[in-house]
Amino acid sequence: MTLDTKFAAGMREQLIDTAAGRGPVAVRSRRTRLAVGVGSAAVAVALLTAGAVIAANLPGEHIVTDLGTSSTASFRGTSTVELGAPPEGANSISFSISCSSAGSFSVTFADGSGISWECSDTPGPRESTTIDPYDQTVPVGHVVNVADQLLADGEDSFVVETGASTAWSIEWRFANSVTTDWGVNANGDTYGVPNERGVPTLHAVLASNCEFGYVYFDDFMSAKDGDATPVYESDGETVVGEFWTGNDMPFCDQQ
Image 1 (cartoon, helix red, strand yellow):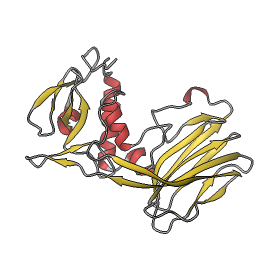
Image 2 (image 1 turned 180 degrees about the vertical axis):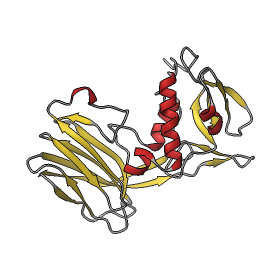
Image 3 (image 1 turned 135 degrees about the vertical axis):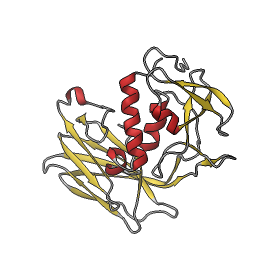
Image 4 (image 1 turned 45 degrees about the vertical axis):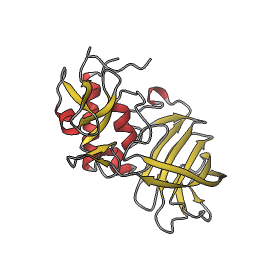
C-alpha cells in the first residue's frame, strides 16, 4: 500500500484548514459527522493511515453514548423536526434521513452548523464521494447518517429544508457527547487526534511497519514526496517506525 502524492497534498490542505478553523469541516459542520462522508477527527486519522484502523479510545476522540429510545417521523417538503423532551444528560442527537424522492436537502442548527446534500434519481459519478462530503449527490432511498450533533441549550427542534414535493423520513435519538482531552507528555507536547479544538502536537498514525505511534504534526506537514517522517511513542522521543509520503514508498498493510 502506498500514499499517493496528490492524496497526501490534499490531506495536508484539509488538515491545515481543520487546524485553522476553516474549510468545509470547520465551517459547514463543526462537530457534525456524516456517516456518508468524514469529519474532522475521522478525516485526519483515516487519511493519515490511508484507511487503516489504528486504535480505539485515542486522546482527543469523541465519545458518543446513545440515550433513551429512537423516534421516527415522515414528512413532505420543508418541515420542522420536533425532538421532544431530552433525557437527563443529553447534549446531542444522532439521526438519519432517508429520501423517498429526489430533492435537495439542507439542515441548519442553532449553533450555525449545518449539512446539505442532493438526493437524485440519477446520482451519477458523484454518488458517495469522499472528496467533499458536504456537497454530494446520493441516490433516492439512500440514508444520510449524522453520528453526533451537539444541541444548543434549549434547542428542541431543527428545520430540514427541501422541495415542496420531496418525501423523506427521519429517525433520531438523543445522546451524550464528550470530547476527551489530548494527552500531554513530559515535554509538554499534546498527543492524540484532531478535533474541534485543533490538531495536537503529536498526531496519531500507523508507521510503515504497522506499529502505532505519533508523528510531529509540523514535521508531517512539511514532508516532501519520498520523505520518511519518524513515528514516536507518545513521549515524542522513542522512535517506533517511519511514516512515508509519496508514490512507491512502504506503507503499513494490515491484510
